[in-house]
Image (tube, rainbow, N blue to C red; front, side, top):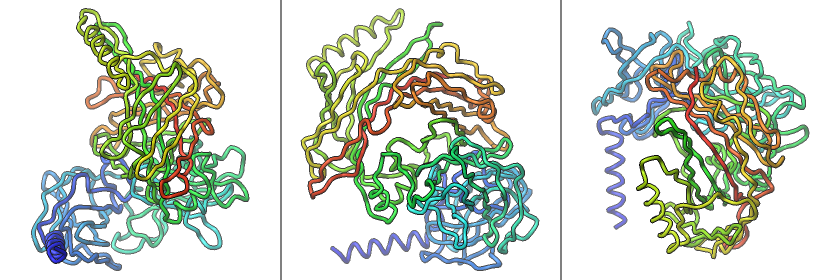
Length: 583
């Protein structure tokens, strides 16, 4: 049996190495995870992933970098056939090619193909842009840890356990700043390329000292920025950053910044320092993460406005590793701990095929039980991926002339009485104490988690927020909630932006403590959102989210093998969203 497996493996490896080259889906990418719609920038490094792209053993080139390496070539042909460009190759292998798009390549639409001794790949349509600036992340995932160094006598790679501090100078790896006059085949010298660039850190725009070619690193750029030494600088393990220059906004990333004298960043109560050190050193850590949610969606029917509620509870006991940590997945509350400001980023892609991080779920038994006020009991069933999910009911409006909806709802309510753990129509989730319990499974032993649900805030000026003027500030108002809770206002717009071959998405996130009763989205943030409404391939949504913060909901679970999980969270989230127009 072992001989058969080895022979089959050898056959597959040989096929991958010597078969006709195949480029994978969405596999022609900038080295910075920027918007696919913005294309590849002239003079910038990019990656191609797939099968049979070169020899099985990876081959790296030296300077001057060639256009053919180990029998592999990457050819770009303009859509009208008038121009053909050979990409510069720095590394080739069976599953991945690292290349540089020559600065001399003219902007426009091209067809790209990979050629090897075994044949040619199918041609893939790509867009070549003048610029497409982005921040390189350590995991090649949009929203991941920025690939950066803290400069000093000995530059040190930025990590959770080696964070930046106020007053430090950061060197951030980037790409897509545009073409250079010098040869792309050689290691470049320093050359500034972007003017008036800003690094936006947790909504605060900082001037960039240098934005240009990375000396000695062909196809790559870098940012040099001095962190201010003041009380306004955001601190934490997941401080969101993005690059902004004119109308161009980069992908999302994050950096770790610790306070003076601290040798590790503050995880904000979601992770212990011990867990952070373990993850950063490559050890896996078990972290629970569950959410009780009530999501309201507004829609129109025959000139009237209605609101539909969907209520559920879901989560898992996740086994995280360093990759998940640096991808942002190990942060239970998300990667935007910007409690007093706004951030805006360009989405990596607006389709359904966005990169995701695979995280393993761990068995805690077949079913978990959630109990709230009035002895309401719900079940969360285990899914094939070892996550747990259960419906908590919903509110379906009865539309005029559609009495069958009401009848169906009543019938479903009757079914719910016979199956009390599966309600379909239910009242609002009442505030008060909730507990999540499990009898235990193969990995997680019996546990109990508790949380206090607040009374949901109400979006008081929702009706008047419809046509959003991108040149003026936008006020969002709500009924004040507990000071320890957080309100997040999110705007998503998909539409045309300068330099993009098709509509791309931008997302702004603003946060404030719930007791503030409102916040204002600055005009400079709104001006960066694509216009929507009356434009092909455009859409826009605005949402307001009310959540808890630590220590409310924190818990640990015992492990069958001994010890405990890392501190995890049982959260609540009340959200309301509606479609809007940015003009």
